[in-house]
Amino acid sequence: MNDVSFAVLYNSLGLVLENLQAEPEIKASESLRSKLENARAFHKAMEDEYHGLIATNKRLGKELGAMQPKTIDSEDIGEYIKKYMVFREAGATPRVIYEIAKSDGARDKITYLKILSNVFELSGKDAQEILKQFEAE
Image 1 (cartoon, helix red, strand yellow):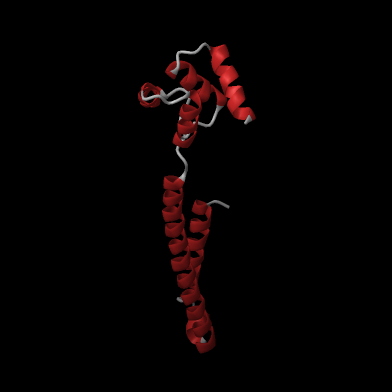
Image 2: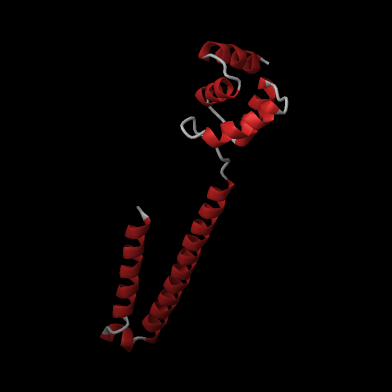
């Protein structure tokens, strides 16, 4: 059952409880009236709890989303390559660039190959050989 279905059913229950209060049998019996009032109070408490849980779930979802590790997409690495070229010009080795890219969020082999081949002007084959060495270590 999804949230919308649950909310509709729960609201319907609230309306049923509310409508029962107007019934002559309920009005005539103190015991039934008391039980119905308790049921309505319980329904209201559960409704408040439900809405609180929904709000908490949304908040936690946002917080979790903010905590997700960023990743470098192999299609969108241009800015990173510029950054890595600065490191290369300062003397960084392919291994150092590989580790920096890893900490920046590179996750897949294609991304690493693009970074190494672009930053160090390597052929695809040479970049693959270097990457194999790093992965074997």
